[in-house]
Image (cartoon, helix red, strand yellow):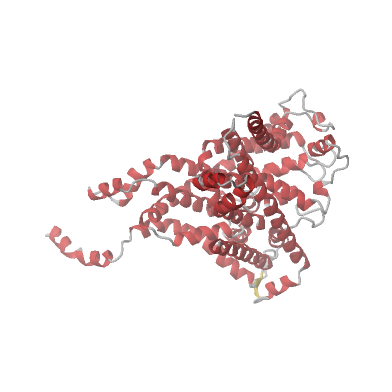
Length: 272
Length: 303
């Protein structure tokens, strides 16, 4: 290898590293800021080295309602993911093995419709049914994206399972449903886990539906975090600590399903 | 006797059923019922609302107004401005995301130390809670204390724009924050496409003396076009629908300088209590997304 090409290779790697690390700045700044005192936060030029404090986290968690919002977000995300998978897996099985295609149109419509187009009628209907502010309406509205996501992802995973095993089971007298439960579900376990994580993240991150359909007792974290930013004051440290608490679990979960992220994104969730 | 009667009675319905295997339909049924409830019904209800004058405050019953809400839209300056703003935001978004995403994908296409680590890191902006990251950006972009101002200072720009507080800069700034979140997605999609490209044409082109630019222009780009179109389609849909980050970062301000159609829609329907009018705006936005996306699909077929 010549000197020039070696230099070129190092330059290439250095460019890529510099670029991607620069893109990580907001995460770095968020975590750094969550350990700053208000005084360090208000310093300009910004301080990079300082005596870290845990006060911000203490303050966020001392507020008992924050734990309630963590609980709300978890309940809604687990509910929307669980129901999405429960309804989505049999549907995906039908699509994968019997090649019904009508579902494709539905998935595309879900992807294209703006969230607000679902939200206005759902809000009015929930108001009449006294469901606004309850978990039911939140979970139901999140099904709009978790269910299509589950169907889309699971069709791919189920198609990868060789059909011969099920055929043998059916010939031996196994019912379709028990073939699904006893053969397909165990064989696609990894895919189900990946789908569940992606659906969970989509629900955890959703803002618009919770903004309208929740109340003070049931609001989820993305709505709750807004309270740290007021009209004339920002609680800088608490905001950064709360943002870290909301975001870091999602990043950790996403790393577990790295391989499937692109696939999930292409199916997409309602993003506004 | 009972067993016999059963075997005699059974064949008739079975023969009728055997014309069509209902198993897949039964498997699909629960999902379809749920979809009808959370998606089908709301969309039909939305259409119904859009032809009514409808208010939630007080107990006035909805009044049928026909196409009145839609004709009113044409004269609604705030709506038209939000529409143009959305198109501006979308065009600027596509113009930044696609080249930048393709560039990052090309950068990651060569083997080097830590490439997989960088690929993993690229996932973070995509999956991180948008509302939380939007607020982190608000802090970073603060015109007096923000780290962004500090960094511009380091390279000699003493008076950088006021970012989110400047009516001319607010949309470009929001485009950049959106690009930070979603360019990695474009990069990962293109990256998957690049990894699947055949090797032979590139070897042949190199042997024939094609320059790196020629190989990119006449081989990589056309071969990657299907993936680029997928990325374009996804970005197009989400850029037209943008609301989350704008809601939390500017609330549409300063003034109405960053009020996109989706945000205007939210305000009209749920803050100003004009449900019917808001439903009409939502339908127009839906149709806008539908038509542009389908237009892109046709373009893809033609290509």
